[in-house]
Image 1 (cartoon, helix red, strand yellow):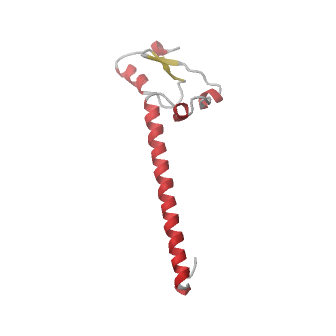
Image 2 (image 1 turned 120 degrees about the vertical axis):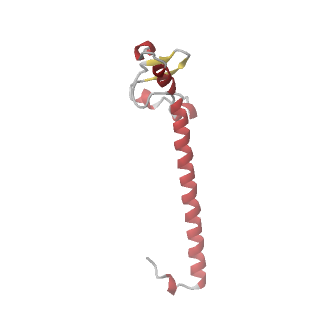
Image 3 (image 1 turned 90 degrees about the vertical axis):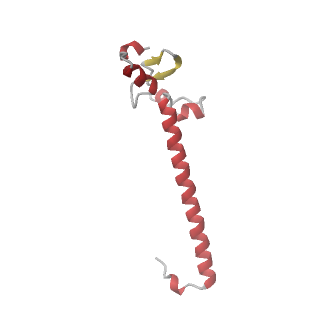
Length: 106
């Protein structure tokens, strides 16, 4: 740690400027991380990965891993689930309504 008591006034002003910039950068990073986490949760509640929605031309993480969909939403055939990770909202809603998971198999 620097001994700031021995710094000159211009050096202190420069240090203050650097600290202010570092605080602003940290705030921007935190804000971006919170927004990204919120967007990922929102996408997951609808059975998607955020990467599938943001850049659909690229294969999803599941496709890269060679995972195939095991379950399909009967109300929207584009919504699928591999059976890994948190189940999407439509799976939860179906099970809560008394449905069976085997009814949703592809």
